Length: 402
Image (cartoon, rainbow, N blue to C red; front, side, top):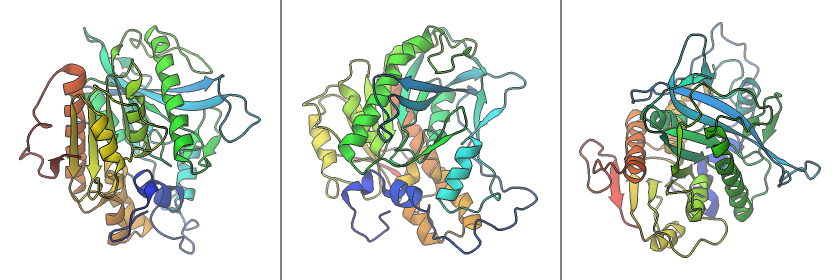
């Protein structure tokens, strides 16, 4: 990762904390005995902030298989397997547990890969109820598709995803195996990162995953399960998605993916959370709305790809700088790293290198508000003014021009 005071490489805004911090050890070097210390009687809980909206949250994992593409790393596998989760407003009932942030094998892989003390930390629990009934409303919910950062997985922005759902969105999060740090499939096997460092190939792979997901959403909306194993869908999911109101958002390399997908006719808007615009050649121009949400220091001086995209946008566009933030401030690690600091032995300098010095609660609150403001404006035609003028409610956000 690019630590404060170090020059930023081309990939630093694609991966920054994700590659050097997550694909390699998270923040700290291996310590003698770090993974073999006796487990405490009770594991230390890691908590995700509560969503702010009025709707409870449901979640449905889906195992998708694209027979038209081979596995990008293992030539003998003639199809592309990946996981997505559909998050939706719910009416949960008894016996519907909250989903874990990562499934057991993926959680252990995450801890081992990041040199975290094993059997000490409890996996974070999301607010999503597995299989809960969909909350019925007269108008179907707008749909947001999320692509995570390089080396991260589809659960890495749960703090943003759940909040959108609690305010009446369906959010589909997409994993990109061999790019993501760890993806657990229903049979229990885990695929870890192993994709070569090739921006064009990585973005192309992600675009194909998202486009395949878009192709399968009408099947979900018709009440049929497109996953490999099939099975019943949560009650009320049929007809709950408004596929005429779709946005694609992403963090880091996922932000580049969102930008490239603006040219798909099904996509009405896009948002880039602290990513450089790498990958295949961009389209010439777009009139679709787009949001840049950038961390401290991420500007056109260090990253000219931002200006290149800005000049091609001829519709509504906005850029927001989150002061004193880090690359992982747009992910769950803004909330989790301060909790991990003690058990993992992170120094204050290491913590600041990943999530900046911004107050974590203020950072989460601001990121949630500005992302929802953009989506409300572009998918619901509701304007709260946040993207037009400074707000005293969010002093850490600054509107900028790229």
